[in-house]
Image (cartoon, rainbow, N blue to C red; front, side, top):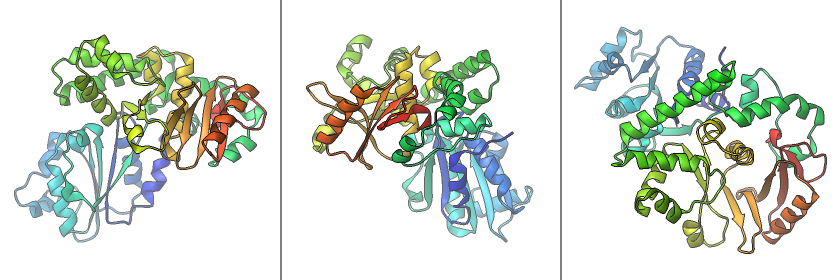
Length: 394
């Protein structure tokens, strides 16, 4: 059975638009499955789905005169007499196809759907010539709402934080408690979520990590000391939610600060890690401020990085806050801090395993000093008090 991602409806609304739809993200997050579902929903026979990692599919688009490509597509039932819908999967395997896409887009009535791993953008293979012709969407591992759908469990999630606070429900919390524990431990890669036993989940997580390291890192990066990169990756996996100390990492690994920066840039651009900046009113301070690190998926943190439960909870909250815009953190020199601040919404969020009144009062004091409109303690355990939101409701 195929399950819809949140992005599915957004993309379906773009079907009639002229622009090229591009979906990027880590390997194994479900890009191909998402496009397969959209392909099946398009009510026309004038469509085709091509895997660019397949040499035979690549050959279809290898013509000196791009107009002749239509003759090759004819054997697949695709012509240029009516609007055509062409899906090209894993285009990083054939970078020069972008020139073909641009030409056909400019000269014919054709709608393109492209998927590419993050490496495609890392190598700058997507030319500016497609500027104004494409819309790029990012696909991540499942958030908890999608996770529940994959588990055939329906639960209402409220968009506004005031509604999340107001509508927390102990009965629903108890019903989803075990599922949330599973989500915290194994994360949201679709294959892992759908695997029926623990050993299979662990095998898949190891395979996803191995695939990332072999295809994205070893296959694309020009790092001379690949073992140093591996060691940094494992160090970072154990430091979820902590501030990056470039000097310390440089010393531990015995490489230059510049090398550490290049490794981190690669990890960020390939979606393996996420960095958030401190909240400050000075742009200069924000740029130079120490960033906090989060990773792509809890399963990676748990079984590759051997992370602690508290770090995994914070990471899960981060990954479920993506849709709310820019995320920052706050830390006073005197020691007061706030885990997450949704800067566009002026909302402060502090994550606790079991929040209490002391946590709320401290958060309120700091949030008020920053003139933040709303503030909530996010608690993994159920707390039936004002100012608290249950982690599984995020």
